[in-house]
Length: 408
Image 1: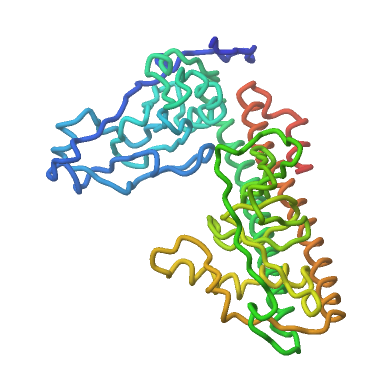
Image 2: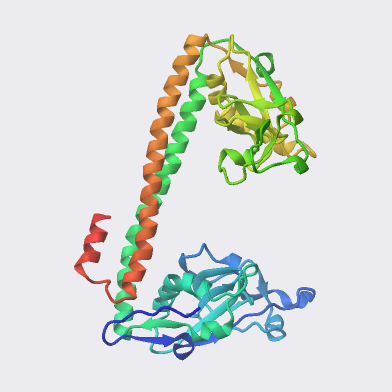
């Protein structure tokens, strides 16, 4: 794929990475040689770096090698200030070495010339990662070859301008990252407040409690043979509901209704027996359901489906059931026996309706707040990408950009 280039401001130029950096790879000492490992040489693998797009300085690694391991492998010791960039499997993790260190072969590493500021290069690589990743020819194990990296061109501003751009991006990104952290904390607080309200509604309920199994039947699903699955709803067929179907319609399958006796309606309370996460409380689909699900069918003369639906989502029972599932030897999911001893408060149906209305209104408010917060988070993430694009077109210091930041 030919790299798309655009017009740069006067005094800037497109230069291949090989002309402005010394490009070095990494390596791994033989793992069966104990004398090569657990030394003092920092040796990075991509798992030591944060997520793609996060620019950081790095001075430590989860594994270290010895001087002998360094000498007996293709790993090289690179000086502090080297820009390390993952180009295998996960393409685009990036950091600046805060001390002399080595990397494995999952990195391409750049030692900048005197005409290139390393933090400027790091920002350019963040911005250009989609284009760099597209240079990988494989659809399975992605890797960008050293040849392609050497010829990849980046926009080079005069050195003083590089430092000015970096200072501006650092300041803007600090503000954006602070806003992102605040919004993420808002999301977590919103979820915690709703969880607390949910638990409180049942804990403070002044009503007699009874064992769940006294008023609820837990009915496991069935598993028709995969050979009978159909992607088309023939006459006499019904949708086979699986846990994943509550999140997406991308994998809809149908089965002959005569092949199962386990059916659910859209208002039924369904439990995901297997995870992650274990003990998901689900509803909203109609059809047959498989063995990964079980239906919680209440005695509706004393317990409404809606009351049961909210109760099963309360943190107290969630913690109890998930804890039992994790401790049970050889058990990988929710067992019906785990529910036998747990009690549910049983107020009148009228009181249940009032509690349901309160929780429903709280949940709607929480969903609205979380949706708005997530939209703002997405906008800030997009803004960071837009600022990088603007910076390396020489437009970062225009009034329009300042206005956009002010509005953000």
